[in-house]
Length: 136
Image (cartoon, rainbow, N blue to C red; front, top):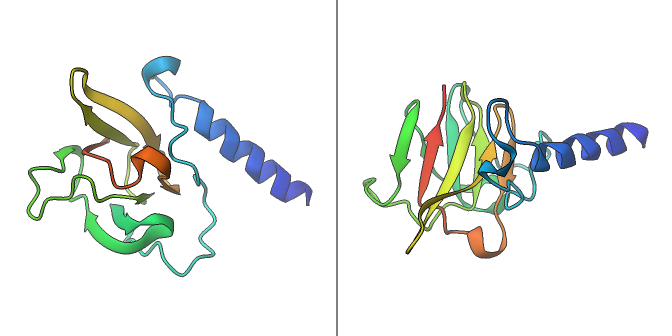
């Protein structure tokens, strides 16, 4: 029981703590609601060394693996992947930042997924991710 509480405390800290080198107000990180390392679900298939993107929550219906580090505008991918991603698993070598295009504001960072974690988006971010920045 104490181990489970400690795990949830670490997850909560990850949701509200900015990654090293980032300003705390760079993003809110709370949209990624199920951030964690628990892979008890049958989904979340993702090869080591990649960040993987899924059409549905909980790592279901794989869409795409980022081929490496860099900025990916999902609107220009073939096939288009903008407004389709609902969950991400990061087995790559760097932080994955999640972005959305907002008219009048431009690119707005909406959260991040550290290496070794996965998470699902709910509410207004489910299927509304427009770009990812895979850091190395």
